[in-house]
Every structure is written in C-alpha cells, then in structure tokens.
Length: 224
Image (cartoon, rainbow, N blue to C red):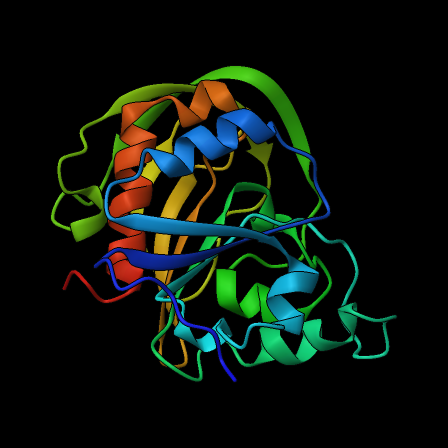
C-alpha cells in the first residue's frame, strides 16, 4: 500500500543525493527555508527502491547526486532499480530539476545527457569564486523577482548545453561555461537545470533561493 504525504498544501519534492559529499547542516537550512516546499532528502537508492510507494506522488524531483557510473540494471541491490526509475522520468508531468554537480552525473549515459542538454564532457572546477550572474530572460517565471547578482560559488569549466532550451542565466567568469541556468522539456516533463549551488556560501544567497523556489514551482507546473 502506497504511503501518503501530509495534506498541507506544500509542494512535495524528492531531493536525490549520493555520489558527492556536501555540507549537511547548511543543506537542511536551505531546504527548510524554501516557502511552500516540503523537501524529502534521500539517496538515489532510496528514491529508486521506493519502499513507501510514493515516487510518483512527488510534484518535483531535484537531483543533487553525482554518480559516475552508467546504470545497466545489473548493479547490486538496491541500486538495481536506478536505471528503471531514471528511464521513467518524463512519463508524467512530474517536474525535474538538475542541480549543480548533478549536471555532470552519469557522464557517459546518453539519457542523462538528453535530459540536461549537456554532452559528455571533461570538467575543471575552482572553489570560492565570485561569479557575476546575468539574468538574460527576465520574462520567465523562474527569474521572476531576480535581478543580476553576484555569488560565491564553484565554477565549472565545461561545454555549454546544446539543443532546444531556454537560457535564463549566464556568467562571464573565465573559468566557467557561459550558461548557468536553462530550461528544457523531457518527454512530458519540464526540466530546470541550474549550475549554481555548491555550499553554504551559495545556498545563503537570496537570489539562489528565489531561483530554486521558482524553478521547482515552474517544473511542477504550479507556474505557467
């Protein structure tokens, strides 16, 4: 029998982690502070195995994992269901957010590259960089209330995404790809990709919080 979420009007969001460490206390503070969002932080294994039977009930799935393998369906339990669950993304209108290091997860897997728009790439990073972020699409619901801002974050020297997309955010930082935020569609699902968000320095930035809250609502089709 499937479990049930509290009927409190909040968006139910699965935050999928694993394959990369992060600052646990600051991460919890970030999610607790998002208005109207009820975040359930869980490993890829927990999300895939879905013991409570609630996987399809989430309004949105935010991926913050960085697994490096390509799922084959032959991994040891409980990872065996990861491939099946990830391949099912987009069957419904359940929102998808690919956040920060999750953009470079599953680097050789065509499916993940298709969802994010990022082709297989090499990656060079630099920490504690001050990045100037330009809002290049001010009419999108995700950028509503957000103006150009600076953020201290990790830079990603990778190729820019390709294919159909709506670019929302750019930077001119020499150690980073120019595009840092964009939207796509994957089958029936809206997809929001956001590179920013490495640690507490970035999570404390009000513009990042605004973007994530707006992005989740947009992906979950609570905003047009």
